[in-house]
Amino acid sequence: MPRSRPAPRPIRYAYARPSREKPLGALPVVVSLCRQLDLAGIIDRLCPVREVALVSHGQVIEALVANRLTSPRPMVGVEKWAREWAITEVFGIEADALNDDRIGRALDAIAPEQERIAGTVGAHAIARFGLEVSRLHWDMTSISLYGAYEEPEPGFARPRWGKPKDRRPDLKQVQTGLAVTAQEGVPLWHRAYDGGAGEVSQVVGTMQALQELAGQQQFLLVGDSKLISRGNVIAMYQAGVQFIGPAGKSYLPAERLSTLDREATMPVEYVAERDLGKSVEQRGAYRVLEGEVILAGKRAADPELRVRCVFVWSSARAQAAANNRAKKLERARGDLERLERGLGGRYYPNAAAVNERLRVIGRQHKVASSLRAEVGSSPQGKPTLSWHFDQDVLESETASDGWYGLLTNLEPAQADATEVLVRYKGQETVERRYGNFKGPLAVAPLFLTSNRRITALVTVICLALLIFCLVERGVRRAIAPEITLDGLYYGKPAKPTGRLIFDALAALRLNPASADSPPTIPQPQPLQARLLELLDVDPTRPRWTS
Image (cartoon, rainbow, N blue to C red; front, side, top):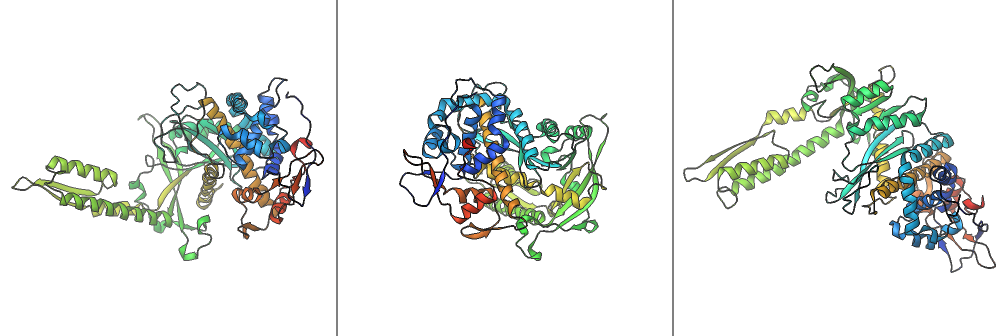
């Protein structure tokens, strides 16, 4: 156990503002949620330290979580942040205890226990806050890394080249999987993966971890197209896990979609969140149709696997596809006209050069299937070109615009076609959380000395995201049935989001204790006081005095 430390003096409100003051921000809120989750206790039980240690691993990780939520810094800047902010007064930790070496030891300690920490904290959050786990949304994203990482340590996420979501192909990456609740999007489970790991191959392990987290309760797993493969579907059937996921092109090609009859579909009364402020005429429309898809095996002897498929037509998708096609045809047309003007010149002196350029145009603009071109030669030896776009092919592509298929093992009696679509649409929740992941939590390209510490830092960031989302959930529930909170967005009412809440609390300050006075907090602004009240947080009682 860590060496005991004297508790700081109780903090009081102050109406005057002395010159010496430290940023306090949302630290009282963060420490309150850490206490309710028993974050330090869980980590200390899984990763104990020697009795002579000044601070435990759990205390260090709590401080790193607080840093990520209040003023994200690189690891080398955490000690300076702790010295500037009211960390000693709130967490009972001296800034010296958060030096590079101590942080590194804490990260090294929790990395082997990442899965148990994630599972235990997630289970504690479910029990403490009554979170609903009957439907969970899962997705993966990438985190880019500076550094070569030529010899990664076995047993931890390995940096690899991949397909980065932040468009940094010049950097290696690791990946993170995240599962969030359907209601309120609270992240309950996470895991770090190798940078080149295929999402399809992570589904079974994710499913098993989420089954353990959900306990005896059956749950619905919702994901993107990487959720669906023949092997994954069989595993989910065998495990009794319900699922919804879109079929990829290998299982549901455009040719199949182009044969669907929109007249046979049923309209769906669903309004996307992005359309809530629009008129009825401007909102996207959805229509659904029942059907099935056969997931073929790799071998001829593999039995047919028939899966229920809800075919969906989206007017927004149809319009987007039409716009995209018009743009790529226009760009291809421009390149083809420039090619015509350059025939026989320096760059296209012969038929071989022209044919190579045609292949590049078809590939770059994705028009190879519809581009028809003939290359010849004039009597003078100059190459000639005639081209056009095949209208039959374009019409066939147009017929599939707006269509996609949702595969599920839910029976129609459990969820009709409309309900399947509505449940799948909750997938934007996990995508929004990845927006928080890389927005307010400032997850930019990382650099640490080892992939072991990268794995641990992923856990720190995901724990911070859990607290971020619980704060958002707490305020929204506290003001219900109201949806907005006065003064939250530039003095105007707004729907509480984690970002707006933390921004509003960021200006809280603390006057440190002196020889003859205890630490005090200048009177919070009305909005800050209201948020603290809604979250049932008393900023005058830091964690170590409770």
